[in-house]
Image (cartoon, rainbow, N blue to C red; front, side, top):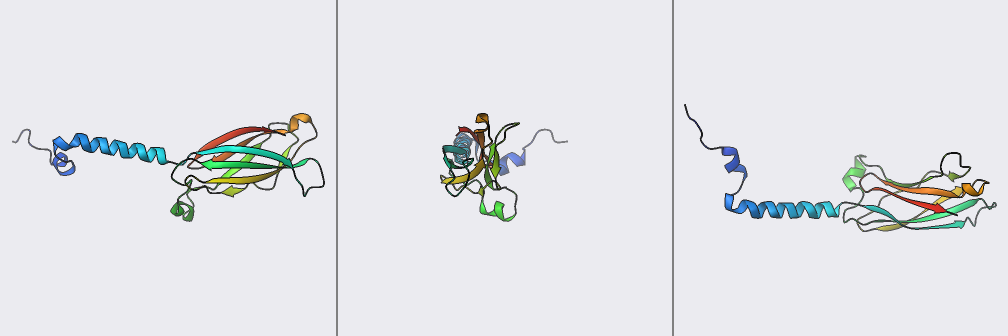
Length: 152
């Protein structure tokens, strides 16, 4: 009967004990770098103007400038090919009972690392003064969610 002995898994998968502290530090620094590189979306600016091509005064264009502050894109090319990540999109939430509505489908796009884009939404305002406000939401599978209130 043998009691004690060596654990071969420890010796075959780890370096010598005197270098473990340095290796663990370098690994932790790499993990922090990767975490800081992840995509993070934000709404930078919002501008609202009456739609020039429209015949009514209720139709407006909302130009939303969005940015990915991370180093990595919101979707890698392989993730797009195998469809495991949805496109980024901006949706307008007008609130319950509002007469306002979005026109058309929400625009879909991708943001690269450090990239800024301007996206245009078309909305039709309701007749009440309270109908002229919305919460814009930037939705990204990997980059998170950003919100901004807008009034016109």
